[in-house]
Image (cartoon, rainbow, N blue to C red; front, side):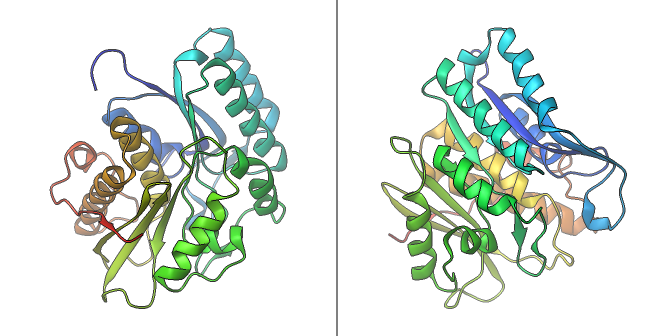
Length: 294
C-alpha cells in the first residue's frame, strides 16, 4: 500500500486490558497500513470471559453522535470500509446500519464487513436475546462481507453445519440475504466438520467466484482465547481491501492468525499476543494456502 492510507471505520467493543473487539482489530489493521477510525460500543476493564469486569455499555446515541462528528469533518468520502463487531443493544444495530448508509452515500464504493457477534459453540448465545434477529434483519442485508463462526452461521440460517457440503449450503443461503451488487463474501470461521483431518481447524470463504478452504493445525488452547474472531475479521477485511481476492485474503489472514495463536500458546497467556506477533500480520512466518472447494 502506497500513498495516503485507506480509512476504515470500526464500530466494536473495547477493553482496557487484553484484546477483544476494537482492541483486537484496530492494531492489526494499522499494522497492515490502514487508518482506523474506532468507535466503541462498550468500554470494559477486560473481556467478560473472566467472569467479572467493570465499565459501561455506551448508549446508541453516543455511537450516532460520534458518527455526526466524523461526518462534520468532511472525511466520509475517504472511508473505504466499515467494520462492525459486538453491538450490545437494539439501538446500536440501527446506529451501525445508519453509519454504513452514511458512508456509502459519501463513497458508494465503500464495503461493509459485519462480524455478527452473537454466540459460540459451548457458550450458546451470549448477547441480548433480541440481537440475533435484529442483526439478521437489519445488518446482514447491508453487508458485503459477513464473518460468522460455525455457531453463528447455524443461528443465522437455521441450518446444521456439520459437513463441508452443509457449510457451503448454509454460506450460500446467507449470501442470498446480503447486499445485492456487493461482493457478498461469507467467511465461516472455526469450522469443525466430519471428514476433516484430526487436530485441524478450518475457515471457509464463499464468493460469487467460488469457495475456498484454508486449514491450519489446531493448537491446544484451553480455554479458547477471546478476541480471535475479532482479529480474523479485521485481518481478512484488511487483506481483502489490499488484494481484492477472497482466496488470497483467506490464506494471508489465516496464516497470520495461526502465527498469532502460536505465539500466544508459546507464551502460555490468557490474552492473545497481539503486539508480540505483529510481524505475522504483514508477512506470516508460515503460509497456509487456500484450496478451492466449490
